[in-house]
Length: 278
Length: 295
Image: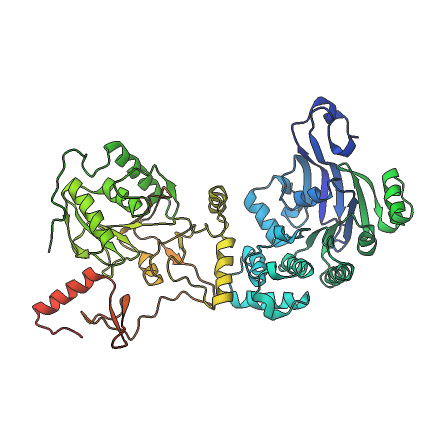
């Protein structure tokens, strides 16, 4: 694959909750992405990006800026109002994946994407064993060989440093860090080329945070997965991502190399963000 | 050994209790169900003098199909004489006056619960099964809207995950009853709570299988000569319950589905055919030939 070709491209992705009115249709600079007249919420507005193979793209922004909604839209959890998303591995990027059928969207989710949610309750079925949770991804991709899947689950759990004998335990009895690691192993079970990480370390204590981030780093280096990492924590972004987008009120206000954005922020909001960190 | 159950023949009711419009609606649903094997067709489940959950789905199917010259057999867990079977027979006979039988081969319509008869059914026979929970995906999602969408998309990951979970925890992916089957390579359906032993009888069967759930208001069907495959992982091929080495203590049958009877005083286990009609028929034939009882 050509290194310079983006694996995933998004153009003018918009997610709107509400009908919109003449005012908010024409005014893009809305405070908190909310129209003062018709109260339509513009969760994501005209977001465009390129994700290249093997790179980590960070998305920062305050809470409510639309970071998670963007990821969930790309993972088909939230329907997009408008926009164009192309995946090089799907019909050679000729089709807008936001418009493909639910079956095809399921196929893309199961074969080409992985998602780690902020809340493990969203990504895992808490009443099932962790083994079955990981196997779900393999089964969804068409695997019907139980022995093979069992081995793969064991391998994955070892990879994320969860003792294999805990495979039969349900994630609900696990600690927060372990739940996150089960989610990660589930997300990478099919070796997807793209992984979405939504605030993976939020709510974990610092040492566990470091462990989880370390794990993601290792996985990224070993498997060369392209990742999109959403975080409001600049430290995480600084450590993990190659390039960074800064979101505010549903729009991307700044984009560039992570070092550049953190050292020389241009937009007013980014400047506040960076200065508040220091 | 035909017998007439139920003495009352009330003229206050329409033939077969339901009014003609209701029967027609049910038959229309049956047609759709037959056309799409394994697909659950919603129907307007009628009030009956039997409570929902007591076989009303099966009764409505039988009522809408039965004609005055048909011969009826009703079984409950393989048994012709259990309360449920007898009550259903009484209701149907009282409103239609049809003959009943315990012999599978003689019956035109067989209504059953939890078993498929041992004797293979013919092309001119219909097996009506009563189903408590028609939705095999109910364990995946409690929402009807979601399960219908999953059926529509043929997205059956959830049910396979549940089987995998069972394998992980209990060491076997097979359920004791109602092990899900794939009908005509398209819809996963609940075979009704029959033992796994009966699942293969469904595959390429000569007779028409109709399944009715009165409480859940669903009808589904397996037409004759349809592929019906029990779900199984590649490395865990489907297995029936092991009935080898067992023998019926009444008729001496082998390789059928047995009930186990435990004598607490003697501390012994006995086996006898779960299908009582089959057992009695065999025993009668043996008596005619002068054979002794097999105890």
